[in-house]
Length: 498
Image (cartoon, rainbow, N blue to C red; front, side, top):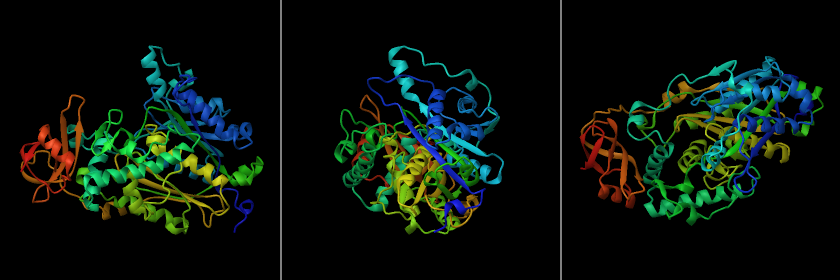
């Protein structure tokens, strides 16, 4: 095994990471998002044992934008950690969070910056408390209200016009449709699949119960998670409230990236050094209704294989895993594409329902948890974290180890390889006539009604997204697998049973 202290000075290394949660309940104090980010950055630096010296060397603070109003929290974070000249970078929704990690890692490796902080979080629970109490949210530091030095935006929208028009902007609706296609492919009844979802999420809840940074540590069992009740209503069949991401959290995560040379110079304990081995990602955008197999995701398979190849590893070498976990379908699809055991450990945090799902930050939560787990693990341990941007649109995989890498860190965008591997269908918003259901969900309302949203395909292979408010159709689609059911589109966007 390579001695980490013999590595070249420019080798990138993560030397600090922190997850911070302000749990709901007695003693909760509202805060601005920027205050939460500052606390988390300071905690990550404190873990290095060289907070002041390393903070002064931070040349860039990178923040994925959340739901908060502050325009430049990175600048306030930089000032709070003593990095007065650091550049602030903010990325918008649709930019993979691992892209910020890649920028930080390659930035230190190239010598562009000596150190970087990647940080994100949400204070939505503070917003909930403020709304209930009628009290204003605490104001953010004045430095957070300027403009960042750099703004990163996605090259294209991660959601198509037909999805926006026909009730598929809500993530739960999209993933529920994917879930219905998965259920059909597995040949399960509605009841059998519901039990399977409960058992999967029960495992995640059990992990969250032991995770200090988890938002909900109550560890409900499979029945409580998957079965509808007065306190566990259906959000988008088959998903109940306890099967969807929880974004009303006060939670943040930060990673401190530097080089072996800087870590040596500051006498940072080598047992705290965690090495990023490789990152593969895909910025290909193929909206869900266009994908020929909506329960599959070739881009995820390709980035997983690509990251392993870059690192000189196989999936059998991976010891620890944290998958992006907003909904069961995301976990199920990624596990299948990455070649992971679906019954094995797939989360370090407990997932976005129980650990918490801050709007545009969970991938950093998973990465921070991975750093902590590797620091506590036996030498030679390898970890895998994944990211998702959009709705199963852009994937990323990063590999990590607590032992020296076999080869230099590399990152690659495999969008073209993903494009070549992804079969697509034409989507026509004006499609009418006979079609067959490819995937569907039922959206109950609080008054007892239903809206059915379905992706359908004609005999000619043309897709569309259609809806129905027929209560009998809704009950039928709740009770039995709708995939393969013939329907009639009697006008664009509306259907009845064929």
